[in-house]
Length: 189
Image 1 (cartoon, rainbow, N blue to C red):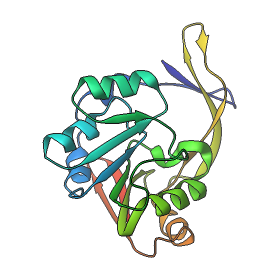
Image 2 (cartoon, helix red, strand yellow):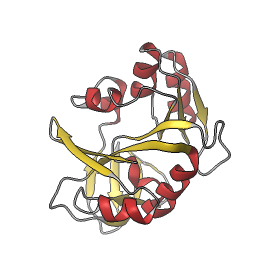
Image 3 (cartoon, rainbow, N blue to C red):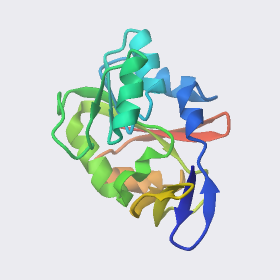
Image 4 (cartoon, rainbow, N blue to C red):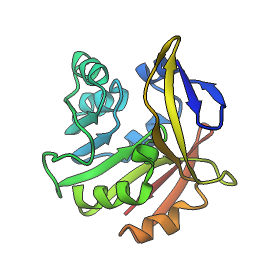
């Protein structure tokens, strides 16, 4: 599968990497100790890992196959957008935006404001980001597998340099950054 950009670039999308632990995942998982919402959970590697640790967790994804794979692996998942009605609104301790999912919908402000509604007072959003020095941007992309081409959609990338300003704008006054295994993260609270 490939990601095709509106400017003509094409990059491979190794979606199978999301089926198994990825180096750096532990630094996300270790920060989840209460009810956790895994947003854009894909095939559920983090959802299932948290469930196995006894953490109450719900994965949500808009792709029926991803939800089915999560359930088959033993995780609880719903086929839903983060902008749809969700259980436990205002009660989640943590919300995960791993694998660049801060880009969902192409509007990080709208996404983080929605997550502010979903997590409890004092709750934390844990997001994977672009590295420092990268450019925050919104792009039009589509997925392509051989002759099968999906429709265009907006996807955002947020640099670690820009997440603090973005977080404060969305109701998260505290931001803690870290990197692990070449991946960049922030906890917004």
